[in-house]
Image (cartoon, rainbow, N blue to C red; front, top):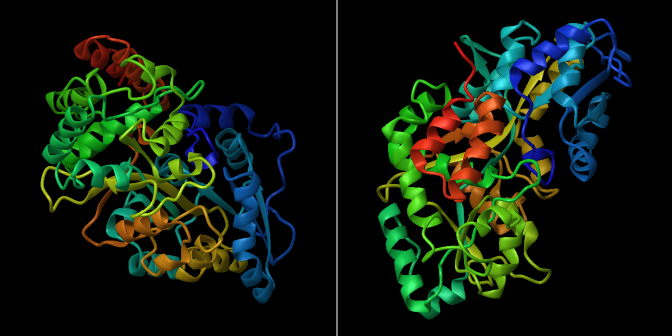
Length: 440
């Protein structure tokens, strides 16, 4: 979304296709040649991989497969690009795709598969997917009944960060339902005489996205997966009572000056507070609760002990009942443009527990691969994330705004959250967000 390519929002899918068609045959400046398959590559055992992962994360990615590739006699050439969506469309239309692409969004993956750019996944990849991934994840790699690619890495959103020492001091416990979360909020506010929550929506041109995560979590937990799925495709509109209900419940916290914005100001200060700035406030004790993904751990001051008995810890936003286990998150899907032997071997390896353990052990990421040992992750929150992802009872759904058309998910939805916090009435905000959906 903002920190690394893992959290960066994507261009609208329509734009990807349009740019690809417009530039096809022109050749993208600086675009690398294809690999060992249909892209016309650099040798029978050379495989090119293209993705959004850049900088230090890209170095770790390449390190994760280095030993395996050497043993197999395969040369893997990876390129990460901040212009992934546009360039991949250009290259696919021009007949010069990479052998493999790492798609950070199921919708983009499905777009390329439906236009026959991607090859159906090799048999071993499909076997790995069915054995090591849940049905929800396999479905994200399936387009029109054909399985095209396995997941790679994954993340879980919806963590509620808190101070274990403060909870002990106040005599409160981790809530097991949404109603108990409301009671916890009231108890902390009355005990301390200060708002319980801090929140930050500021993220440059992407300001507002943390608010969409709040809404998505509540829609999934309060209305269920079926309504969530229909909302993503606009069968259930933003103006529907189910979605308004989620806004009302989130607003009971975020729009209540008695509950926010601890350490920063009034409700409107949410929009001017950088999303990462809430971490030091939580660590210092000026804020009791905040809602953010696992990557918030990277924003705590040096020396902060993130542990169940440490300075800060986190619990997953609960559901309507104690047995509810639905979460939102994100991840990547791997697709092949080539079906040559070397490419198939690489695709199979990337779908395996062996690769997942190799990459996760290097730090900073998780995977929903059931063959992954949670102990491979050094970060305790990432270990908990892996357990959630591997739980067969977990209902996982991709971040809704990432699945919606860019004009909505990265447009009117973001802007609507900002307007909502600034005081615009909920009904007006919902109508404004809904207006971003393309006609027809």
